[in-house]
Amino acid sequence: MLEKAYYKSPLGIVEIIGSELGIQQVKLKIELTEATQEFPEHLKACAQQLEEYFQGKRKIFDLKLDFNNASEFYQQVWNALLEIPYGHTTSYGAIAEKINNPKAVRAVGLANRNNQIAFVVPCHRVIAKSGKLQGYFYGLETKRALLQLENPMSFAEQGKLF
Image 1 (cartoon, rainbow, N blue to C red):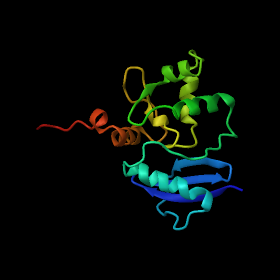
Image 2 (cartoon, rainbow, N blue to C red):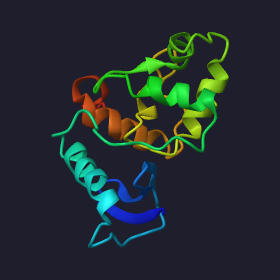
Image 3 (cartoon, one colour):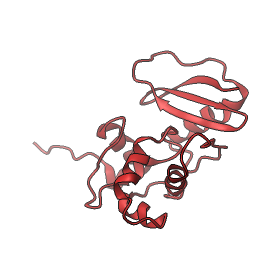
Image 4 (cartoon, rainbow, N blue to C red):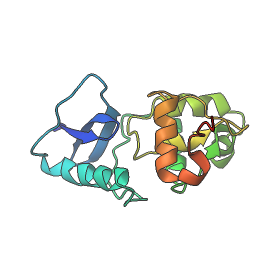
């Protein structure tokens, strides 16, 4: 049975959905303002690990994930995303190469867009080959904030001198 809870992150309310099979969804819900007070047992670890991540204390999530409703291709892409180290980025093309499908660059982008387990499956760590931030379902400002959290030296916002 799927259970649902809401965690208050620095970016807003995050909806967590999962069961004993694992976490199925972690999504930012811009329109919500209230967090869950008591988390269902299957979702407690996810909420705790998100808290540690946003505090800069967690670099690797250790959660059981449930990709069962996704295609084999999406699962390959998402598993490749899980291998991107904290504080690092890669390109859509590099992910396509990693899954032995070098012509699937656009399909990798689509798989990122359809990632249901945001933050935990770090699609925000995938950027354009040129090094520019590109595509993120919560907007480029959110993507920059996540990358800045993980690697402030490389992704800090440039300030104005005058």
